[in-house]
Image (cartoon, rainbow, N blue to C red; front, side, top):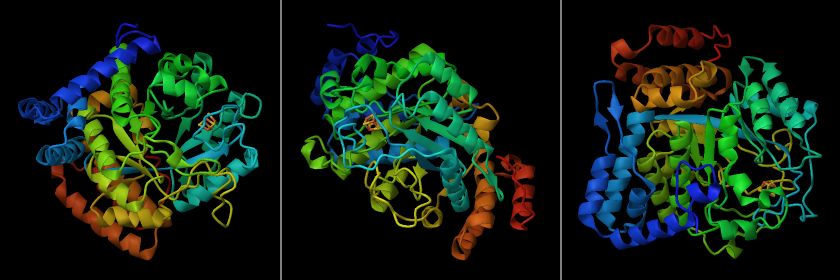
Length: 482
Ligand code: SF4
């Protein structure tokens, strides 16, 4: 039996199975303990401080009690609190990004993913540098500035040198008024040396989904290939941070195991990063298993309905108030709309989950990783967000200005991110509207920007922001590189 120790560098000690089981028992026993639930909601509430706003967050045990609670009024309170926390730290901004699939060659045997090596009927593709360029131009023509690159694990077809070359190509493309300003990377667990190379290549966040924290299930779901090694996969974020990567993104694939187990494991992982590296995860993603070639989600018996999914999102937001939260186009417009109110701060738009998908006329299926539920264009998503009162942001300034890792977190913890992010979001939205938006989106957008500028107290509206927006609006465009 391994001892629970959040400071340990051993996966089985910082994600202790016994501690998770104990947490689930505690949550079950206390799920109707109203005084305890009230005290947790009170503890998690944002409080004003001399420097801004502060939120205490919750431990994995505390947050698990909230997740287990099924008293309708208390669940409603959680939803309201999650929204309040989101507004206190992130405001009404929603960061936009798109995935870019580089290669679906993979040597692993993950049973829930169509890229598993035994799948012989999926088309295998790997982009050449020229194809990377064409994909990136197509993404820039939509207005994207931030990408998450994705590749299967294959040391022969997708070695680290290939990934680095692709990153270099992506950053080198200046097309019309656009450039990709931040490349996040979602590739398999690797060595400290390779993480150092990724850091030197100028990546934003390194994202790696745990898939499941339940070791026994993990071994069954990953029967073959390097990913079978639970400890190596679970300890990847520590190696990434040792390699100098400040911003890491966690996530589980909900539906593979019991969601209560995954939820506790995810928060324990976040606590571990904070305890060892002094900074928690930059983002948490909440993917749910989806239908795909050779994959039937119904064979996994841990699927979660929308109500539970919403509760998970709200409870993560309450537990780790400073962490960005991501939802992808795996989810429908309706689910994404609700999730935005509960704490999501980043969404993808117009995603293609196949290799070469952005340059193909028809939406291709032959190399897709999963079915896309939200198939709207970026213009439609941006328009929809603005009509809901959100500000789609294309800003990457934090990363460009070195506000990453603990520097980002200390600003965020004081509620200061709002002050720099809000004007930046408005400026990058103006750029988007002038360069890429349809007439209707442009109209909706500039009206929103005007209203937003009026809402910010004069001393907080950066003069430069107002001037830049004016310049951008008059089409006096240059790449401001926020
Ligand atoms: S989940 Fe990743 S590692 Fe597993 S088969 Fe799919 S691409 Fe390969």
